[in-house]
Image 1 (cartoon, helix red, strand yellow):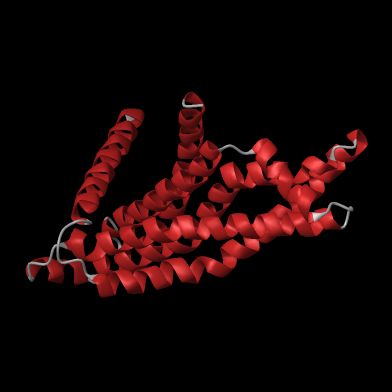
Image 2 (cartoon, helix red, strand yellow):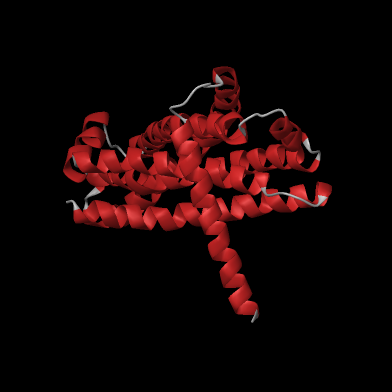
Length: 253
């Protein structure tokens, strides 16, 4: 009985999440666009997450290069370090790590903000005034994340490659050798994968935060629980979708 209730609740949440996501996507192309709200959200969600993503990319690239050098040095194959760092970061770790960092920072912020508006009845007041809640509150955040997440991932990848070269240079690997290895490991489809993933992950983060936030109740305690739930759900969805996208890309190779 308990399992049945949990399963019904889970599938009801999935259905409601998909319905909200579909409505928000449709409203991206409708007016009013609330461009001021979009600009504010892009600044908060995008630029506000810049430092943590750059720091993550830099040190992840450094540690990846260090580990690859240790493993490849006995085989005199350290010239492949640049390509291995590139394929690892651009295809997998760059999008995933940047998205997880953003999910922890942005997902909780979106949920807490909308959750507070719910428990203080601000959202109900907007509905009474005839405001489209999805158009006003959800769509600007979704658009901001769809634009910001690929940019943040791109910068994370660049800093990771720079960090990898900093370590590789200490082992006598010159820039030409480091960069030439990219073409040996990377194909155009890999770069496409590196852009598609953060685009999907950004949508997941925004929609999960908005859905959980707009479902919040129970006062201040409910807002805290909702923020925690949104971060966990976003992280799990990112990891799951990462596998399925990678599997789909393999099919088209």
